[in-house]
Length: 304
Ligand SMILES: NC(=O)c1ccc[n+]([C@@H]2O[C@H](COP(=O)([O-])OP(=O)(O)OC[C@H]3O[C@@H](n4cnc5c(N)ncnc54)[C@H](OP(=O)(O)O)[C@@H]3O)[C@@H](O)[C@H]2O)c1
Image: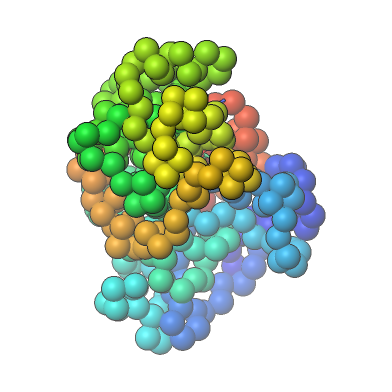
């Protein structure tokens, strides 16, 4: 038997509870993973709360991003690159219902975890990392660019800002003041969000592209600063993209191959994704409540 987190109705973290389920064998093309760490994402909470409506029946499982060890392999189960999965493989990536001790999934959203990458970071890279990559595929940047990254201390934002930096561009990121040293430490120039943002950014130089990883403030600033709409992309603007004529981040770049590249960079220290706190599975409600409230920069991770 293994424990999984489920919920029977939409609501706050208090609707979550743990359930014992039998350990089923993976079917053809599937693998079973002993979960070592789960990175929580705002999306998980938005679906659980009903903010993002879903048709899926109750009880529902929760979570999408994990790192773990393969403990059973169904017939013909292969990674996205066609190589076979083996028992004992250390893996990371996407698996529906990841908040659990064990999950059964198709391995098409998984890649191998580099040995040097801690499981907590590996479990946290999938959604934030691939969303950040998607932003830069949607609005490519070069060394000629100065890019405003909205919400640069968030999980998506801090990766997007580092990818901007790696492209040779100048990265300016909005964040609360307490996160400015963190941004400087990864080569990103911080600026406080909120009233007066346009003037503060204008004082730093001419912006040529915007990646908004929080809402629409950076998009609005970009418009006010004369950035062309085709040089702006958003991930959490909830309708403002269409209103303003800016891009949504495309989805085609969300591949295990791109995840593996991010993992290698994180393992070598070239890419930083801080971990704010870890929680045992027993404390799944506290873990979500922490992620959904104000907390130190970085990911909230469950270690079952
Ligand atoms: N469309 C997609 O595919 C997609 C994918 C992933 C995530 N998302 C969405 O993108 C958003 C960010 O996700 P995440 O995982 O990066 O979340 P996260 O790690 O919780 O980061 C959110 C960040 O927002 C910042 N923030 C708060 N108020 C702000 C403001 N007024 N202006 C600028 N930044 C502000 C906070 O920074 P401070 O601590 O500095 O205040 C916080 O670090 C969420 O809404 C999520 O649902 C969308």
